[in-house]
Structure formats: C-alpha cells, structure tokens
Length: 206
Length: 205
Image (tube, rainbow over all chains, first blue to last red; front, side, top):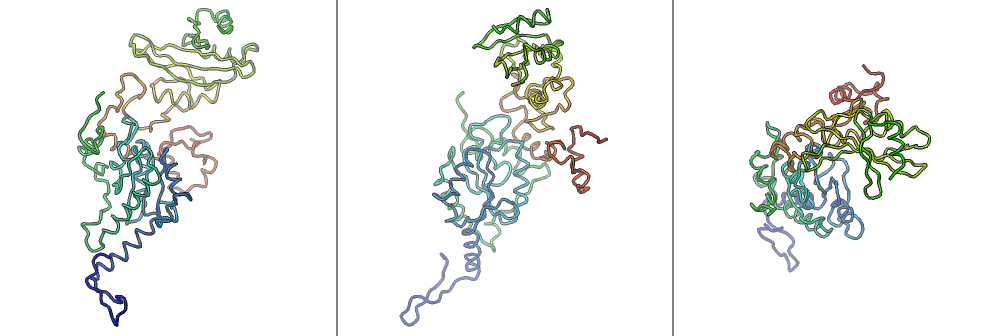
C-alpha cells in the first residue's frame, strides 16, 4: 500500500497497526482482488492465439498471475484478450462479447493485427480493435512471445491497481455505441486507420 | 496434350475453343452456352469419367481487353487425369454462366465464393449469396481489378456498417443445422431466423 499515512510500533515489535485513509484502504482491497484474480476471455483468431495458448500452458503459465480460470463465457469474464486479426465480419461479434461482459472489464489487444491491422491494410480487416471496443493494453509483436503477453498482463495489473472506486474520472466508463453505431467519432476512426495511424502520421513509401 | 480435348472437339465441334498446355495441365476453352453439356459429358462418358470437381474460380487480367475467365478444374479419380475448362466472359456484358451444382453438389460454395469475389452470376444456383463477405456488404466485388485494395468506403463507414450487421444473418437455417428442430424453437428464435433467412428450406412456405 503506497498511501499508508502512519505506522506505529508498540512495545518494540514490528509495526502492528497502520493508519490510512478509508478510501485508500478500500481501493487497495478491491483493486488487489480484481487485479490478482482476472478471468480472461480469450478471443483467438490467428497465430497470436497459439502464443496465447503457450502463455496459458505450463511453461509460462499465467495462472501464476491470478488467471487460473479462463472464462469461455463472456458473462463470467473480466478481461477480453483479442489474440489475432479481426475481420470486419467479426466486428459485431467481438462488440457483442464485450457488451456481454459485466463491469468492471478490461481489454488486451494482443499483437500487431489486433492493435493496428498489421500487414492486413485491406478491405476486409479492422484497422485496430480500438475502433470497435476500448483497449487498455496493447501488446506489440507478430506474434508477441508469451513473455510479451505476460508483461502486458502485468501492465494491466498496474493499471487496475491505480483505479479508484471513489474517483470516477480514473475509471473508464463503459463507452457504449453512439447513435451512429460507432464508439469513436468517424474522423478519429479514419485517422487511426491510416497506415501507422496508431503511432505517427507516416505513410508507406509505395 | 490431354486426349480429352480431341474427343471434345469431335463431339461438340465449334463450341470448343482453343486449347493449350500450361505447366503440364491442359486448358480448354468452352463457349458459355455449351458449358453444362460439356461438363456433363466429361463426367458421364465412360472413357472420360472426370468425376471430381476440384475447384471453381475466376480470373480477371490486368489487361482490360482480355475477358474474364471462369475456371473449372476437373479430375478423374479413376484415371488420374486432370483437365481445366475455362469459359470467357465479356467484362462489359452480362457476367453469367450456368451453375454446375446439378452436376456436382460440391460446386455450391465454390460458386458462391466466385460470385462473392467477382460478381459472376451462376444461373440456376440454388442459393446464390455472398459467402465470405457478409450479405449486406455494399462495396462491390473485392477481387475485381477496379476494386481498391482498402475498399470503396472510408474506414469509419466500414466500421459503422460492420457493427450494424447482424451476425446471425450470415447463416441460412440449413447451415445452423437446426432445420429439423425448427418446430421446437422459441418464437423469438424463430423470428430471428426468419429475419436472417435467405436459403430455401424443404417443406417451408
């Protein structure tokens, strides 16, 4: 706990009581429980899903980070891991899965294709799943190694532990679709769908 | 050169166009109106026996003068011989050929894919609708040469249309494999299926 106000020693023992703000104490308890027992909903569409499986299996084993149980029902999941490219035909599917997940929920975009469309800059592919659902952690790589995904999961832990029940600003709202059926303004979607649009304004030479 | 070409010429005469050999495969051009008879003859004649339809696809060349080609790859499993039959279509004209589903049931999805990607209509196909792109896809036929790589609409419009699509509407009732259980479905499910239903179901309506 970072925001402990005061600890006291009594009779030469180790600190055996502490003073903290009630809000911080509650946030610490809630966020630690949430971060350390995430239930992932895997949405694997391509080779990233193979690395995802390796991450789940014994050698890397993300159960060590509290993801003991994979939720194959979105209604029992905390974190959606999109592993692989997302064609436009699957866009309503991942949106529905996201909508079915109960709050609080987080999204990890695993790999280049899920994050930006990757090499598939064509008519059939969503140019980054952040045009469809809000994303918390982007894991780069093609595909990312299991260490990369684990690092992304640890970053997500960090993010969750920084949230506060009492400060709504620091928590992400659900971000429903607007009346056009989009999550973001159309100009923003066009902008981030450009080649390298998620990073800088840079065009391919060809 | 595959001897079937000479046999075809002897039987169908002027309906058979030029023939050539490419990478060990024989390609024979056939007039569109004779296609169904030619393929039926190749399949059923005892010394031909091209019983297996490997693929149906199409080609559009970068040279705009050249016609579109619909390609049928047939194989005789018993004789171990391949033959490629092509039909030329005028890109300015009516892009339509006869469906070969009456000959090979497996041509169903192959022809749907060719329709989806090239916009070629297969006359007499039992359920000709898009198979790779969703059914309300409005941007055209992606493998045509005049189709831009990133599609015709802006990315935002593509996202909007994709999110507005109904995932259940991609499948006909047959594909959902519940045709026989239809009577036992909840009314709400029936309604959803009715909205997404495009294929024909034996005994309904």
